[in-house]
Length: 178
Image 1 (cartoon, rainbow, N blue to C red):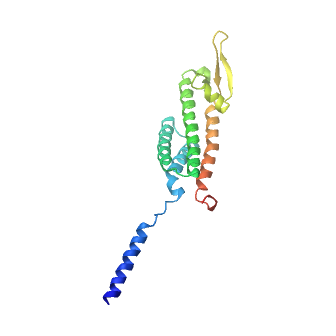
Image 2 (cartoon, rainbow, N blue to C red; image 1 turned 180 degrees about the vertical axis):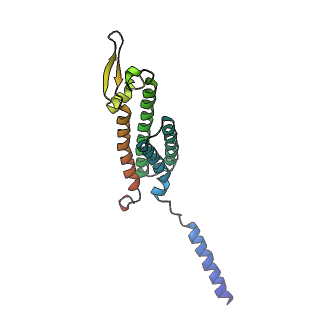
């Protein structure tokens, strides 16, 4: 009887040891990157519903935080590709904040009708997003202005990048990616 009890204890101890030595499964990629996904979708939803400049800034900062955290967890090439896609989306949202800030600042000049003077901070964005521009000012002091619809153009680019990032996120745990 003692022999049987001793064997049971040995088997139990070995079982516990074997279970504890086994590698704990990594949480699914979707679970791992869900806060990043949610933060980006919060920005998308706010833009679609109408958002203030200040609120958009807060949402973009939250996305930036989640991106930094996700970057710490990205180990595989697929993870890094997903984080990079959200990084590109974040950069586009930051560009939209720059365009919006300049559009707000130009509001003090009623004669601009929402157009944005192309200064050194806006010029690269005009190039990057192919924003429509026109000449303004006088012949003595000419300058270019970006269209009043420039913010919508940048948000359109963000929408494309968002769809790409969401597609990568949703395919994260599909059998093809395992």
